[in-house]
Image 1 (spheres, rainbow, N blue to C red):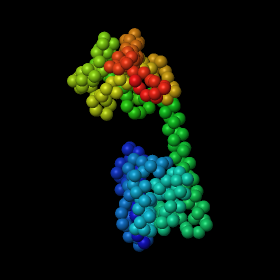
Image 2: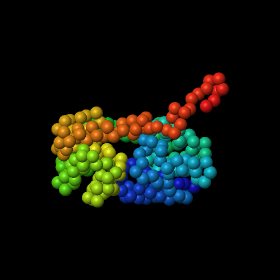
Image 3: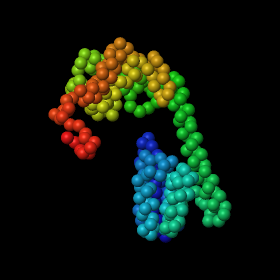
Image 4: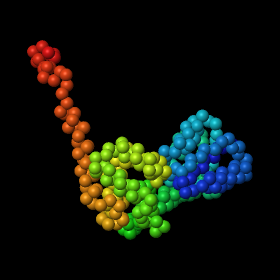
Length: 285
C-alpha cells in the first residue's frame, strides 16, 4: 500500500519536536504494516477546528490523482476536531479510494470500529470545545483582576511578571511628548519620523507607521482604562497621559478628520455655475 503522512500542531508554543514525534510513530506504523511512504503533509501552528489548512487542502486535492491509498495520522484529532469536517473530507477521500488510518488508535474494520471512530472524533471535538471554554474563563478571570490577556501591548508600557501593565520608564516620556506635540499642532507624519528617530518600536520591534501612531493617539489605555472585550475598568492600568491632554488630542483628531470633507465641499471648480442640465435636449449645455 502506498501511504502519505499528515502531521499537525496547533500553536506556536509547540515545537518541531511534536512534529518529529508524530512522524516517527507514523513511520513505525507504516513499516510494521508493510506500507510505502511517498510523502508527508505538515501544517504548523494550525488548529484542526478549521479546514483552512494549506497542506491539509493540498493533500485532499492530491488524493484525486490516485497517487496514494492511505493517509496515516498520529491520532484522528490531527485530521480534524470537527465532526462535520471529518465526515465531509473522509467522504471525499473514500470517493478517491483513500482511507485515513490512525497510527496510535487501533480501529477495526467492522461495525464496532465505526462506533469507536465516531466516539474518538466526538471526544476530540468535545475536548477542543472544553479547552476553548477554559481559555475564555481564564481570560475573564484575568480581566477581573486587570491582568494583560496577551497580544500586543501599548508602546510606553511593559507587562510585569504578574501580567499587569506597568509604565516603561524609558519609552513612556517619549509617548507623553508625542501627545503634547500633536496637541500643539504637529502632524502625524512628522510624529512618525520623530518617533522613528527616537528608536520607538512596536512590541514586535517594528517601526511605527502612520496608522499605528493614529491608533496610539486614540488609545484609552494611556489614561488608565483597562480594556478586554466588553470589560472596561477605569483606573485598572497606570495612567501615562493626563486626561486634559488626552481630551485635547481627541478634539484635534476629530477636527482633522472632518477637515478634508469640509475643504472638498468648499472647493470651486472651473465649470462651477457654467453647466446645467437641459431636460428638453437631454444634454449638458
